[in-house]
Length: 408
Image (cartoon, rainbow, N blue to C red; front, side):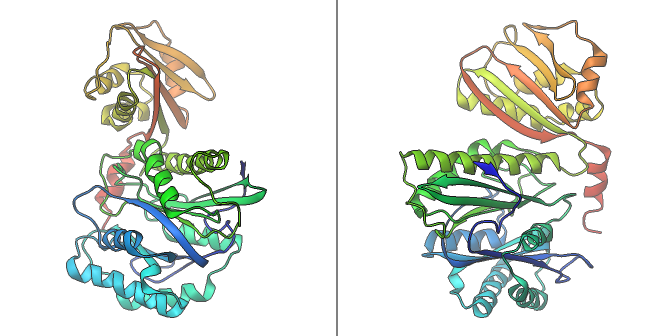
């Protein structure tokens, strides 16, 4: 597997674009398209929030019932959530307009929205945006970047990534674009994340891979504990690499699984690290837990702890907050027989807690680690052999400022 300079349209046959439609923002791209020159098999996961945005309902129906998908239309600024029957009709009209312009079936068009909950979509601007996108979509590198920028809301950077691997003597590419900065606490996947590949793979096999992989990637991140109404993760495969079909139980399957996981983990970490107002990515690694489920529960409890997040922001080595978060996670362990560490790329690793008490660590060394832009917390539970990793970010004053002004 090789990381390449690319994004969601790096696989063969995928065209993308981003444009200004004036849906909410002015003088910035706020609509994007992903279009495949050939029909795709698709797999997806969606928000577990009981309040589901209209695009989630539309996409879930299309993924479950359509023989193939071929395009995705995404807007920012307005989430099309809490919009009732009218919101769902807006999805249908968006898909219908895209289908007419692109010359593909209506049920092969997926839609995505992100932004403020409540307002209805301005369909005249949406339809005009679709026409513009259809005219500019391209396979070139810049169009992929334009699409990734067009789906941003409070994100500070666009998030795109691509890798290549060889399967059956053919080069297979996986490319991604994602957005998310606030209202991030997925219980299925992530905010908006789109992955495209030119691999030959069945819908059943792709679905299995997607549903298994989100458990240890997008489901292991949190910024603020809020699960969005619009969370959507979609993978599309058009088969244009012409590799031998990827089948479970083969070396090709394992290679593709590892590559897809690497893409998803990379994007998940970028989402966590770009949390609203964040200065630092927090990674919690739990090792030697009794079960995999306990390891995941413990790791996510730490990165979800507001007190731990605030301590990292203040560069305060208050390990009691970490211990407390582990303790209320619901997983069983012996606090008298475990260890906690801080680790940074620049300042190394220090032991801060061991077998029921804090160690004689240097506050200066600990503060230096907590001042880095990536902070790792390691919890050795000494209960078994299972490991899990979760990602979050520090909690800063700017998080409150951003969300206090979000609608203005």
